[in-house]
Image (cartoon, rainbow, N blue to C red):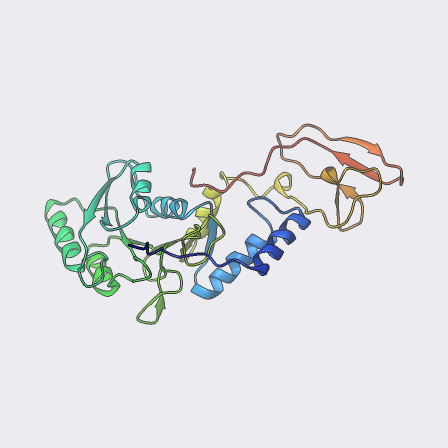
Length: 285
């Protein structure tokens, strides 16, 4: 029997050019103009503020934190899914409770979810959140799911890792719940070879961005400038950047060693330093 692959990436000359442009600009980090452009394009497509993160799992992790999930909580989650839909619940010390699928969609059964919520309401112990998974591009039946959750004031996270481009009654998957999570793994609808995206309304994305960048403050020490031109003769390319005024310079993180300076043969000033990498985006608080 031949295998049915989830989604095969189609890569061509355009991707090679973009990778080359990233190397040429020296933006090979977790920040930079290409990443910002990607977030803007995603936001324009889905209509919600968007945050690029390390993986779809990281997006779910941050999304659950935004919804207040913590130790001792329960989170109801689709049972037919990849384990990454469940792992972040455990990362936060909460307990996943699996809800069976609707045979018509293979996604979470609205009727069984409603029963689970009613039973927990009678016990006075509602779940902190519900994670609904859209499977293989097929959206869950969100209208009754969202209605059941609204009756009990339980927020919904949409795991849309496999549903970028899908829509539910004219609205993009991942935008109907309180938070949406997408994946760009190699087997997803579009790929960056890895990575993910978190979308949400209001100030939630700004809060998640703060967490995703190691709670980094917007200070001058963390600003990087790409290399914008070739270095003068005798000045190592690895240590040279150019500011808007045309003066050669480098920037470093607060923990870097003091830079050393010298004159190159052209008489311009170049600097070199040994600095730590930029704070990487992850789901760590």
